[in-house]
Image: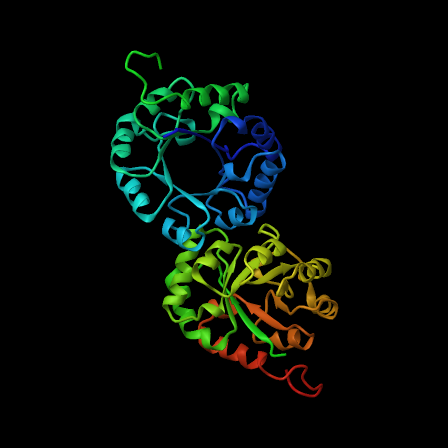
Length: 210
Length: 210
């Protein structure tokens, strides 16, 4: 299966800055998540409208938590967390939406798969400032999850061009990054670099440089 | 037209306390709004599930802002504010839901009616601790709005059994109360008292005691 590259908004960038980066990087990524947890429905809507207005295909847009906003803008799907509506509720009442589920353990990943999630995002894999003070879950736990669930597992947390190969080699079906692209000096160059790594044929041969 | 009595959750009561009051007062009211602005979708869902579990008919339940939760629980409708999805977005994509709109001026009320709102809630009419420091908008402005828009106008803000008649006499199509019922010593007695006032024939004759 082709592995995927997801971008996740930082929750800190103004809408214009976010949308302007996405206008240039979207050709290199599979999904852009609008994850603006402290924002209202109206504000999240402005982010989504700005993406679409900047040429990002709705089928590459995933909205965190706000299922209603996803329906209104006709985007690909939603990313649900513990505080959200449940996967099964959303799959039942909004069958057209792809549903991702944020998980932090093998049990949660199994539960997400059982509930009908189309994919899960597991992390955080490495140390990351967005989860400061919390121990990273590491590549080994990722490997165990990939081996145990039958839905794609996207890895998140401290991933960048320097360690992405290690994560994909461990079996992740994709990677999700936030600061590695949005806070990069050259977001397009970073997105291209990550896309190049993700779209290689995995697993790599042992001898090949990752 | 029969005038209406709406109850609005306080945002401060635990779900069990709220649902237990509603279990007893719902026969006397037309709508119960779950307005828990600081709560997550999962927490709002718990409020709605508790109402339904306590025998409140879904067709009496209105959910503030979270259109997705309203769809999942099959309730009557949603109440939208400035920070929400727009009335026209919700009417277009969720045509089965009744849509109320919170307004604070004649212009906003006209805009809500034009956008297809099924009703609006206007306030605050009287001084209220939930809008402390803000001047109340008064009964005269309510009268002007009622005369200018063709959707029901529900009045809110500092309304209780002692001043409800004045608001209805001014032409409000209903009243919405929060603390007058939920923080009353005897919520059922207060709800009955308010229902009795609301369900009288309005306008009252000049001589009759309000």
